[in-house]
Figure 1 (tube, rainbow, N blue to C red):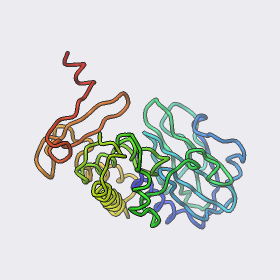
Figure 2: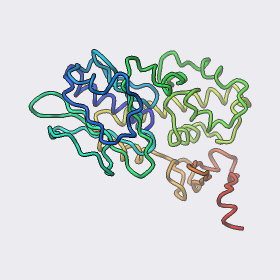
Figure 3: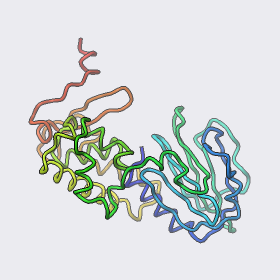
Figure 4: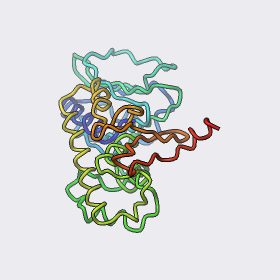
Length: 288
């Protein structure tokens, strides 16, 4: 799933290439992708793009009229194209979800695509991005200047949930998903099963520092890359996430995994859990 660093990079790509230009056509190719009807998508046509922003994992294409707000979900992506056909795409079973073509003889713009059969990519055409329920409930952005150590500590105080889940909760902190929460916890040398409310002041400070450093480093690595290269950059920058069975780059211990119904987490026992592997109920059932 695209998370804060990748969505930030996509926002920068769109800002550089689309701001100040007029939208010629918006073609939804999958009926399920559009989650709003008022204003209609056609209200975007003829409008000038004024800004591109990120809200957590949401992309916000602002115009001098409505906003086009996109959430790429688990398998969605944005592909910039320098030469789009004028003819509208044919709705079908392919990966194309929506196409936006900018005015101009070169016909540049972008495609929104979604792989797989589980379709969760969402597009909203709204007058204000806060009309999108997912944006309205977002917690603070971890890269915002106002997100201080004191603010972070306040969010965790008294919370009786595992810190892995708290980091992923968009209503608590915006933009962090499964991959970067693994990376942040590894950098902080902290078990994903620690209860947020049990963290000491030293723990909270170490986690806060790891969060900022991990996310800023990922954003910096993504700057200037084409959209087609962002996924590979994300995978290449991971130290524990997606690296089950490989040696930890810090201590050399084997990266372990805990599987859940629809996701998994990766961690280093030596760096994060005092050398003790965490229970993996799915694996335990298979071994019975």
